[in-house]
Length: 76
Image (cartoon, rainbow, N blue to C red):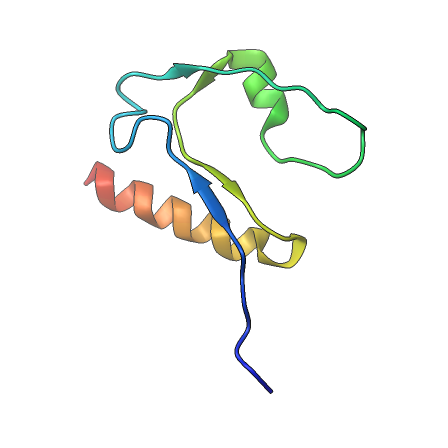
């Protein structure tokens, strides 16, 4: 069995400083297909304080854990 490939893209609007100076953000769903975690928070708050990660369905948990770990290390 070969190595697993995870195509993940991370967007950091303000690297390292997003939690100190949030960006204004909005969302739009073009065709209604798919799902995105965090859309309701963006609609409610209108601010982005963390990186955005795009990945496949099977990698959501791993990518979430990696981002939480990174943000925790940066905060300490």
